[in-house]
Length: 462
Image 1 (cartoon, helix red, strand yellow):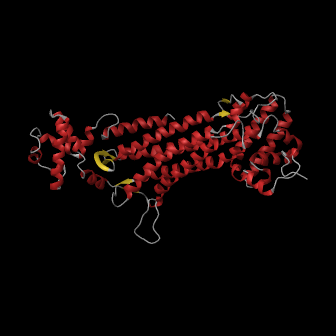
Image 2 (image 1 turned 30 degrees about the horizontal axis):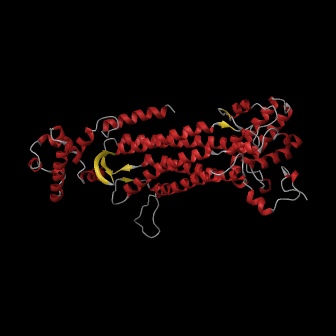
């Protein structure tokens, strides 16, 4: 009986069951790595010719054939076959059909195990570059808005209760710092990613005189991997990427939550352009912040993929196991999700418009300058605990009289402490409060502008 897959079927006496062939095939999703598979094969053939395993004519025939196949795939003319299981077998079978027996020599000195491990690294490396580029674009947008809003005052919150006044620009720079750490984690992940498994073969290496350093150079890898067993069997680079992606999505989710709150009628701090929102099928007045909501929701999706990959890897004995076919769909979806969310945010953030008066009015509520009054009293020689008590009683009076601290008369304030004089109003205003935080990391408008300038230098150096 003929075998389903002639690439490996010599040992088998019957064809693979049709359902099993479909069940075990990965070509429906791993075909997206076609470019990296061809790139790796061209480098492998070039190396084999260099060490004398292939002739120059054989190398050239393989490279020309692979180049033609690449064009066919990109023009949508290539026919993918489930019976050939995966992207690697499909391309190799097409090459053999195109150039004859020479195509069968391409697989000399390698296995699908090290081939797929190489393809995934090449693919993730390419997609990571896109993610880092979109992340940089988002950060640049944040800096532009932060600079524009350096003087815009809003309430800062703890426990979602009004705490102290801050500037909107300073708040946005907090998002920037989160993303800056995300960029560092992803870039650092890229360093461990950029190691070449090709040449590990199935698990033990190969008897052919391959030059792995040369192949690594051709493919832009920093170096070849050190251990053949580890090379084909671990996917920790994918797990690390997904872990960094989960943190990135967590930060985007936190920002999304704030955008959702700020666009609500209860806060009414900002406006998002209509192109990033949708309406209601029944309530004509609604303008829903769908982009932030969806990004917030997609965070759980990425977290789930991280857990999936960790669970996939946790019990595998060395070396390669078929389990690892399940690494691609979670990884690919994390890549797609990060790129989509970052693109949406990078487009949306520069278009945010603040409602300055609403922000300012909200900062006036909740006695946001209470800490400034306490600090003022301490500078006048009052012990902090006593100052805390004085301010607490002042706030209680303000609640009873429906007055903010800055709206009280000097006489009203002095009933709580005689050290208070008319210079107190320099610190009780919102502008005075934010301006007083004039140090690196503080919310003062001058510090926001200085922080933006430093951040721009960091981005320019990438």
